Image 1 (cartoon, rainbow, N blue to C red):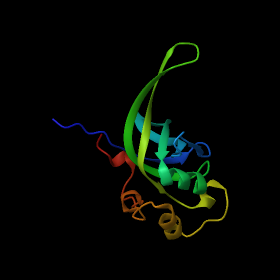
Image 2: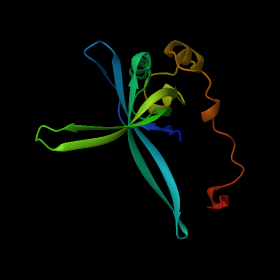
Image 3: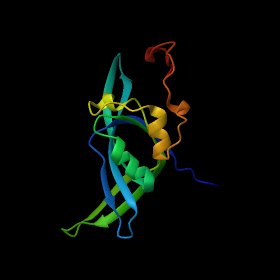
Length: 150
């Protein structure tokens, strides 16, 4: 039986991207992503925020650092990765992270309160990211969450 490890998240960056280089020169960027969740508890809707650490590699990492900033909406398609390490105090630590296979820049730079927006096609074309955002485009809502049967 084959395993599947895939995650798709759409949310807002919680901090500016942090770009580093590995010892062999490969770029790696870390993103903090907040994803809102809404569920019904009794007769009331409750909202909570989930926070995820996202790791982006290579040219895509460099473009995230160049074009993204805190507050910017993004869509991430990737996989979960579990890692463990020994902390300085000798204790074992572990973490689950999202390793991005693609990052779509949503909205514009103005959405995060930073510099003026550039055309989306130019940003996607120069970033090496797929310009097809159809999987993440918002569709007009025909109803409300109250219409969902679960």
